[in-house]
Amino acid sequence: MSQAWHEELQADVRSGARVGDRDIADKVRRAVLMQRLPPGTKLPEVTLGEVFGVSRSVVRKALTRLASEHVVDQRPNQVARVRAPSIEETRETFAARRLVEGEVVALLAGTLSAETLDALRIQANEETEAYRRGDEPARIEHSLNLHHLLAEHSPNRVLGGMLTDLVLRTSIVVALYKRSGLSSCYQEAQHERLVELLAAGEAEAARGAIHDHLFGLEALLDLSPRESRIDLKSILG
Image (cartoon, rainbow, N blue to C red; front, side):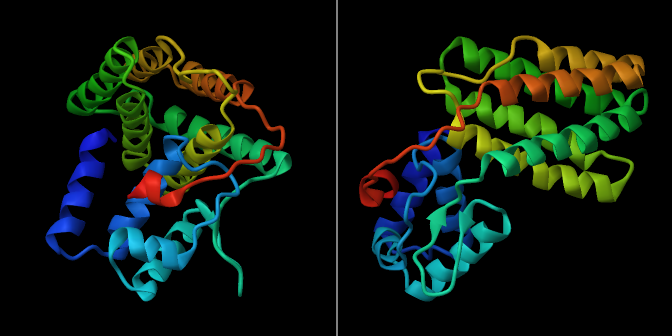
């Protein structure tokens, strides 16, 4: 999630390489995660088409993809907007993730291979290093990678799929509503502790660690209404 992805995509646009709906969806999703597109931001098809050099039909596919991920709202005869979840929906989303991820880590405790545990430790350590050097995009990426690894290795595939969806939904909410002036949502040593509990087979302690982590994230949110004027071309182009 560094500047590299932005430069690569813009290079593709300038070179005439084909930009597809997945590329556009990825760009918009990352812009939301990095708090560059606040809740309620309009995403006109014409403007996005000009930014990426594609037809409105390609943009429409990208927006449909983003709507399925709960990143944008798409309504008939209206311009798509970055989602602005209500306070109630936000609370319900965090509650659902606590239930699902708590169960996933309890099932995983004591079952993960040494290779998988090492992969989790790497992501936790890389997140800490990114935080210390002030690289928030990289910190977010490593945090997401860790939780996606948990979902990927869930012994219950249905719960794993639910967790993948909920990780994105809560990450979007955190990006949209992180308290003003807060540079990072990093919670020191929490991921490292979780991994060691999983390695030790401490199922209920791992469940509790996830609950503490998610309650901590929820406490960092500012759910008050906000207004903003956004120049899409300057952000995405």
